[in-house]
Structure formats: C-alpha cells, structure tokens
Length: 259
Image 1 (tube, helix red, strand yellow):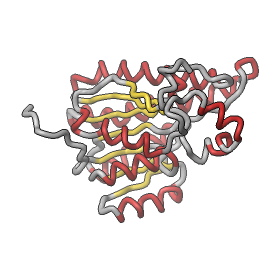
Image 2: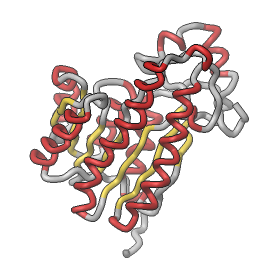
Image 3: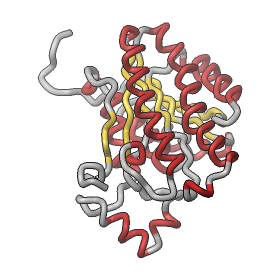
C-alpha cells in the first residue's frame, strides 16, 4: 500500500450502520460520519425515532435509511441488516452503540436485571456484529466499532453487572479482531467516561454526583457526545487502517488516575 503525505479521515463512499442512533452518542456518531462523507443506516427502536435524523443527514448531502432494531428481539436485527444491505448493497462500518446499565448494588441485583443487561449488552451486540460481519467477510473489508465504557476497566459502585458486560465487550473486541483480520476487518472499541446525554443528565444534574464524577476526571469536565463521535470517525477512516483489537479510552484520564 502506497503511503500518502497526510492521513485521511474521509468516509466518502462508505455506508455506516449506527445502532441506537436516535439520540446521544449514536446520533452524534451518525451525524459525524455523514459530515465526513458517509451514507448512513440509522438503527432505531421505532421508525418514527429516525425521521428527524434522516432529514438532518440528507441535509448534509448524504443518503440515509432508518431501520427498526431491537437488540432484545434478534429477528428485528437480522431483518434490519438485510434491509440495509438490500438498499445500499453493502455495510462498510458498524457502530455498536446500544447498551443499558440499570444500577443496583450487587447484593440486590435480580435475575431479570442480570439477564436483561447481558441480553442487550452482550448477546445483542454479538449477534448484530455477526450479521453485519457476514456481509463484510464477503466484501473482504470492514470496520466494527464497539461503544464500550470506562466501566469495563474501572470499578463503579452499584454497576457490577454493567461493568462486567463492558469488560466482556472489550475482550470480545480483541477476539473478533484476531479472528477476522484475515478478512480485512478491523474491530475496535471506544470506552467513554460519563457523557452528557438524555440518559445521564438526571444524575449529572445532581450537584453532589456531578462533583463526585469530576473528582475522578483529571481533565476536569464531563464528556459530550461529539467527544466520542470524533473517535468513531477516526476508527472508521483510512487513518486507522492499521489499528485493530484496541480499546480507546475517552475518559478524561479517569482510568489512568486510578478511578
């Protein structure tokens, strides 16, 4: 491969599927990829959730398709992947963004809570990845980006099952990177700290909790969705072509500070 003078972050001609794309990190990632030239498949729980986002992407001059995906119902995932492939003819990049984290002290975790967290964060992520990877294997290329969490590397009180699931995602990333490298597929994960989203805002708006979180982040601020989306674009781009099996911490230094 001939080296170029400058790295390229251009995603023109690529089709990117983002799960959980209707808000937060997923929405920011979809718009960032579109802004870098990609066409988008936006995975949403309900079709209506994707209407506004599709319009925003099209306003950027890119094509977009909303598909209904419920990671707790794997048939919807397989149908959505088939629909996207039929519409665009390929999926070049998968961003696995869906994840849940119901908090509870370990001694109070119920079997239903355990099963639901593992079903979405692990089972749903794996089988979504498998469905898309089969298309990528046929094309001999692809990028898979798992949105993990700092929780896969540090301990968070009351989040034992969520932390366990994200640690598993980090190792699954390494396993798939090793297995699918021969097909020209890279597999990486991104591990954000607390990010301002609709889901985290109720907790982060609590001054005491906000101060507690900031006390663990050396850079001194809560993240924004675009902080994660920028890393998504990088890993999807030609600039990251030799990176696979990595877990990139987007945590303001929480993990290195021994949080």
